[in-house]
Amino acid sequence: MKLLLVEDNAELAHWIVKLLRAENFVMDSVPDAERAEAILANQSYDVVLLDMRLPAMSGKDLLTRLRRRGDNVPVLMLTAHGSIDDKVDCFGAGADDYVVKPFDARELVARIKALVRRQCSERHVSLVCGDLHYQFNSREFRHNDAPLPLRRREHAILETLMLRHGKTVSKATLMENVFSLDDEPSVDAIDVYIHRLRKHLSASTAQIMTLRGLGYILRTRDA
Image 1 (cartoon, one colour):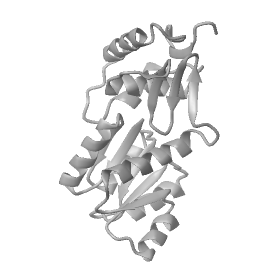
Image 2 (tube, helix red, strand yellow):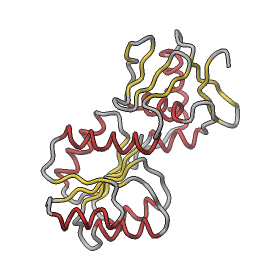
Image 3 (cartoon, one colour):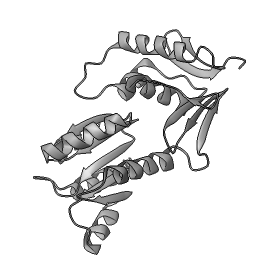
Image 4 (cartoon, helix red, strand yellow):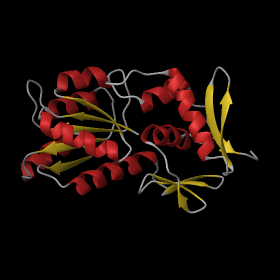
């Protein structure tokens, strides 16, 4: 899953990006609302982490603009104050949740996962494809009740396929969900990651099939 961080404190932004990449999130980070608005006009994210007070345009003003144009991306506000006024401002602008600085790493991760879980499924706590299970709470893949050891980009691709289980996913979609703004997107790299995932799933009844010219689909072997 892909997150956008909008935070002008370079040290804090670096810490958050490092923390969330370790949790297998694909991360983009920008220091101001203007750049974030331009990116959000052309790219999709699963959650936006938005600082309340930013130079030039505030996080609250950016959020107001997003909601006015019908962008319902889940937004977690980062605020330096836990006052009632700040909370009311956050939710009044259309925020889905907020966290007060300085925050504990575990709390930030837990709140993000809660937003992701709420966005992806209101009725399920897990997804199943054959004997492959995906747990929303932990964002963990399990096969035969054992964790599936995946690298970050392998996890991102399998997660994208699992969330669209039974549907064709184009290479362009996979690239968007795997590579951040700082990366150089590579079609060939997607092929490499798919090859590695097939090895991980060799003993599973879940399989990744190639639909030439269209993309990939995750489904059970007997489907």
